[in-house]
Image (cartoon, rainbow, N blue to C red; front, side, top):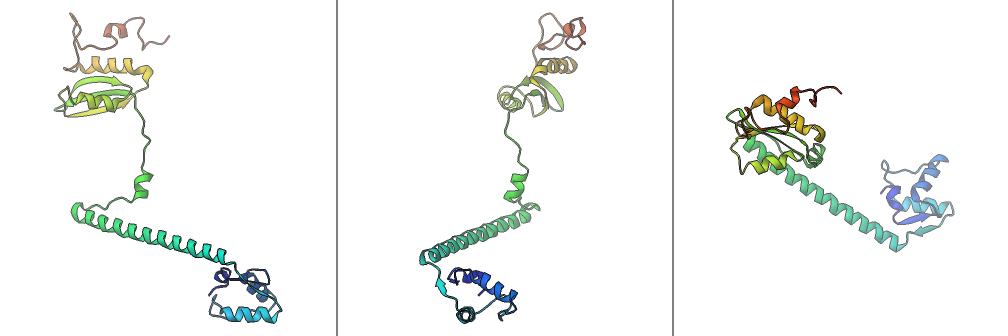
Length: 208
């Protein structure tokens, strides 16, 4: 075995076996073996020839080493099993869809933070915008509209909360969507800010 592994079982004159073997090599007395592998009996014999003691590694330390090795082996077996499982299902996916499944690492690498988005949204029916709205949580608001409005798709633009009324109103006046309410006695859809306000001297779009 390697001198590094021998350290799990004994010490040579109070030092680790690989330190003893390295010292012997530095002093021109390299020990012969098969590559990095040496026979324990040769290391012990060389130590005895140098007048050094062989001190066994304490049993409790050896037991801890064995337990750590068992735990490492169990984890390795788990990883191998998980990899086989992953490969099996990915191969099935290729067969069924032509695309492999992403690994967990690839999925995690593409993660996005979970957060509410403020913005203006557009409900669309047959490629026509039928409703324009705003929300500080646009996805939740669109989900609510799926129960009370007629649309087949939607679009969203992210807008800072300070500009929601302005941006929503501009799009309502521009698109005049049929599912937005109507001003009484006025032409056009309801919006938080009337068109006349935009065109007046106090328009929020005019520079101060």
